[in-house]
Length: 111
Image (tube, rainbow, N blue to C red):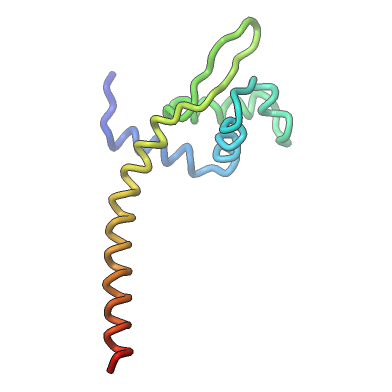
């Protein structure tokens, strides 16, 4: 089933809206890790961490690979690039607005 770009962005931003999931992404930015390794620093069960990982996986932010009896998680940076592209549009808008404001203030100071 194909999902729309809006649905994909909804899933990405939903996943990023939770601090634990953002921290899990930061943890994975250094290297792939097994689920039980990822759960260790948190005051949560492996099952609870797995639920967070499922949200990240559904959003396309991570991949899980089965290795024997355990699963290894790794970043899948494509989804972050999609979110960055969406944010970039608004970054350009606000940069333009702030430049206009700066020019206005500077023109007032010259008087």
